[in-house]
Length: 545
Image 1 (tube, helix red, strand yellow):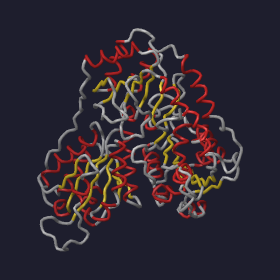
Image 2 (spheres, helix red, strand yellow):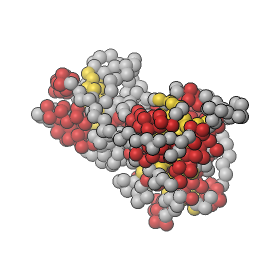
Image 3 (tube, helix red, strand yellow):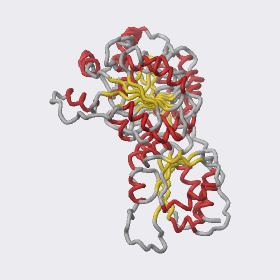
Image 4 (cartoon, helix red, strand yellow):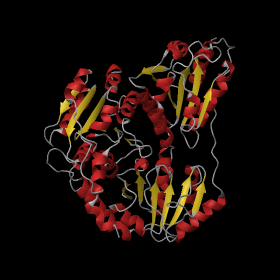
């Protein structure tokens, strides 16, 4: 058999459902081997979008998504999305082609050292130099990508190696990785500290969203009565409808929520990931922090937990819950007023009727339309803060946001992956006009795949997040405005349906009709960001002390 046939056999053995990408001539043998495979090849319009889609598959399933590109410019186009997966802990296997390595006839044409280029971005980067290496390298790539902490792995398959004849090698079976359990002493120490606390809080971070730990955490919360908050990427692990929920830490300090965080004498931090914008900043030793995670804490001057429970999170939480006999955190009088104040502030403008629409009203309207299992995929921009603070999630990974690399351009491709994987669930991409245009060509991919998908574009004709930062530093408005195409006509040119919102009352019925009709829809939504400074800066100055 050809080595490329063996490569596809190894991918099938890993349970690969989709490969996203753009092939080049160096991938043609692999592409031909895929032709007879049960793996679906999803052709995209840009390599970056392909890797965003594959990373999102990995994020939602825990199994590595796969993307494919050719050498040179194809491989370099993957870089941003690989960094997105690596920083965001999304399992991803990247396959690139290369010119023949045994006898090249084209000098250095298009040739870059892609293996070395990838090394700083991934967990492992390897060139396949013999066909017989394929079973072990593919098995190793998926294992490394998927084990904690998940991330990206790169394999380069040169075209002459792909074409080589090899024996029908046996592929290596997938194995269950049994994670280590925390020591008894670590559990005992955590229980001791929890029992001594007067004002404990639970924090749910990104690492908790990667594994099935919802039930153990729910049991823990209900048994000891503790209130909880989450990071941006920890949203959905526990329901935002839970009476114990107090909010999302979209900032590192000086938000309504941080009034409670400052008063807490203990924070139980489950699934903390240091790549996220810090949800709180440690100062001194008066406030205790228990770090519960698959791996030990990365100590920084803003994060140095006094107690670490390192091992399988589910097992650790189960054992801590069992060891606690009473309702150790049921006295929540100290934070009820804070919780009420936070909710009132967050929802104060849910029914605002002004137009262009305020982001607070948009978030509230989107929440009213979406089912509990509906997925909102956020691009990056000013709106991400509004959704992070205001959008309640009821199930894991139903608000996909990137609080690690925080790159623009990921929202639409990620939503496409969701719509492909879950055709019976509502899927909405929320993008700024800047981020949308970075991968807007993927509308063609969505239409070609006959997906059901809505994209909402927050249209303010500028890079709103940076304009807000500019204003916060008392700098003059400069160099951040641009012009947009007619988004309705733009959508129609791809075969999608375009809508333009003309009043605050139109968004909900437009979304509902779009879901009823099915297909790909683009909603041009004029947005009013004029309150950014007041609501996200001036109103919060009361907490500066």
